[in-house]
Structures are given as C-alpha cells and as structure tokens.
Image (cartoon, rainbow, N blue to C red; front, side, top):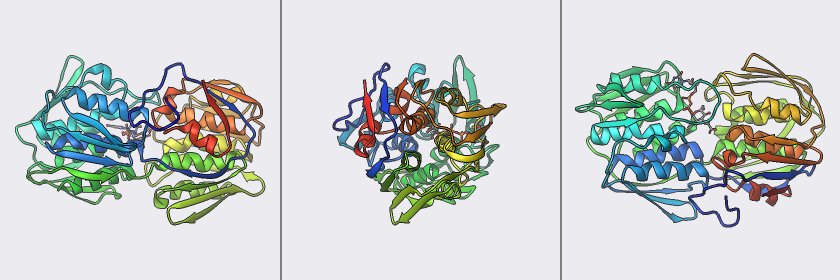
Length: 431
Ligand code: EPU
C-alpha cells in the first residue's frame, strides 16, 4: 500500500512487512478515518438505485478496493471523486452474480445479494470468504430472504435467491448478525409492506446503513435497538452520504496510546460508539478524557487486570478483543478474555506468546493473561485485520524490533496505519 497521499482505492503488496522499533510512547493527535464496515454496507446500498450515490469520508483501505471490484463485476461504475469520496452509479447493471474469486476475498460482498434481489428480483452469490475467526454461517440472511418470499436454492457453488416481489415479514434472527441485519434491510427497503427484524444487530454500522437508506427515501426505524422496522417504499433515489467514523480504528489508537505509555488525542470519534471500550479501559486504570468528538488517552501509574467479554453491541466489540488482550499483558494480575461472538478468534495468542506474553487459552474462546510481562520484539504474522492490529500494538510496547508479515490483512481495514502511527512518534516502517 502506498503510504504518502492516500489513494482511495488501495492495493497492498502481499509481501509487505511492518518493522517496528518498540518502546516509544505515542504522543500527539490522530484523525480517525471512516468506518470500514459501514462503508461496505453503503457501497452495497448504491446498487439499489439507478442514480448516482456519493459517499464521503470513505476510508482508503484494501476492502474498499475489493468491494469496488465486486460492484464493477456487476456493471456498476465506482470511481473516486476525491481523497475520501466515491461516486457509485448502478444504472446499467450487467449481472446479478459476482464472481466467486472476488467474493472469496471479502465477506461483506454477500451484501450485494440483498440489494440485487430488491432491484432485479434475483441474485446469486457464493458463500462469502473473510477472516479465519470461526464459523460464519449465513442462515440469518437466507432465512430472512425466505420469510420475505424469496426462493432460496443452491446451484453449484452459489446460493441463488429469486422472487416475484418481496413482501414485508416479521423475521426472527437466530443471532444478531451484523451483515445479516444489513442484508435484510437492503432487501426490505422496497418490499411490499412492513418488515420487522426481531433480535436484530444494533451495531453502529447497522445504524449507519439505515441512515444512508433513509437518505435515499427508505423508512427504517428502531436501529440501535434489537427490533428494526422497515416500511417498504415504492422507490429509492440517489444520495450523498457521509460514512460514520471507524470506532474500531479509534479504539485501536486509544489502546495504542495506553499500551505505549503515551498520551494521544483521537479526533473525529463518535463517543457513544466507544462507551464499552472506554469503560473497560478505565477499569484497567487507563485515563480517558472525552470531549465532543475527541478522546484523550494516557496512563498514570500501573494498569490493573480486568475481565473482558466480546459481545454484540453495545457489548465490547469482538474486533477490539485482540487489541485489548495486548493491553492486558501490561496490567498487574490475572486478566480473563472471553470471546463470545466468534468461536475461533484467539489464534493471535500464539503470536503474542512469541513476544513473551504469558497467556494460556482454555478452549478456543477464553484466554487467561498474567501480567505485567515485558514484551520482546519478534517476527510475527498478522492472521487477520484485527489480529494484525493487535500485533502492531504489541510491537509498539515491546523492547527491540518487531517484524510483522502478512500486513496486507491490516491494510484491508486500517488506512495508512504506518503513517498515522509515525505521526504519533512511532518508529514504524514498511518494507
Ligand atoms: N452468525 C450466525 N448466523 C448467521 C450469521 C452469523 O449464527 O447467519 C454468528 C456467527 O457464527 C458469529 C456471530 O454470528 O458467531 C457474529 O457474526 P456476524 O454475522 O454478526 O458477523 P459479520 O456480520 O459476518 C461483521 C463485521 C465483523 C465483525 C462482526 C461482529 C463486516 C464486514 N464484518 O461480520 O468485522 O467482527 O460483524 O461485530 O461488517 C472486522 O472488521 O475485522 C470484522 C471481522
């Protein structure tokens, strides 16, 4: 990935590495980019209409490029309008089934199915790929489409969903799946009648998609709670929509400030979205000052061990579980980390151990961390986007040199991460 001026559609080299000389406290201010996961939903939503949709505050990350390829494979025009602006026009769609090799790169690509089903009456998509963090079924999506009158079948490697006009329905989601809620909102926005999603995900990224859809003429309410109501409208129109700040990037910088024993101001955050993280960081002894759209984070004295549980929103985000575990290696006492969203999201612990962390796992969802332990620079591998971010934090806290390979995973979700951290005084280079 280029690190100078952010190009909006980035591609990162598979062999890129990050080299960190640890032990420097981070100091200064950093701006948070737009949310990766909210952008995925927003890009899919643009497929619902034949008019221009302009997205602002789009992060310059790998996954935006992947999603752009998926949309283009369907005939949509996707073009950068500025450093963080994107125009999407889906007036002349040429397909309703993205190629499997594109879908395999990106879990969010499955969102095109909800939008295409609504727009064209049929769509096909292979089971989506994504990070290796546990089982990731899509039954919530498929059961919801079926409840709205979609006929779901499997043809070869692809799921096919067809309908002669979706009808509003009351849908129970077995699990409050984030992409599931987004996919069902996309399908329901123009369905005949009202759709209610019970046990819906409440994540800010779901709220963000509803805000964009409402700006296109949809009538969606209840987002942020676990019951979402979508009153179907006849037609939607183009829009201009600003992507919400990335709470996960903001949280990663907040933890970076604390773990490096520095002091950082994090700008353009939505404080409400960070409530659980701030609460747990304070419990661990981190100082956090909230002011408007800013957060100031620093450390005074020793950190304390705490128990954390990754849960659906408003619980602590699973995407911040690994970064928090790194912080807890520096806390006095025994910390417990429970991952309750995904069933295999502790694989990064092996890499942390290489750096000297004292962590044991019981099963695949609980880690027990004893601290504080000095971390030692090592050669480690980024296993997915958040695990990679966690290793960067560990490298910042460690003595000596840390080399992180497979850093393209991090580039999928973090804009110019090396450059932003260098701006805070980190010694971090990309090779
Ligand atoms: N689940 C089901 N049935 C389904 C769908 C999901 O049981 O039909 C279960 C999964 O097995 C998993 C849990 O629900 O245990 C959570 O999965 P969910 O569907 O909510 O996750 P997702 O929508 O696939 C999004 C984010 C993830 C984030 C999770 C949880 C995007 C593109 N991805 O995934 O982000 O961790 O929600 O908040 O929005 C990341 O950014 O690094 C990332 C992995």
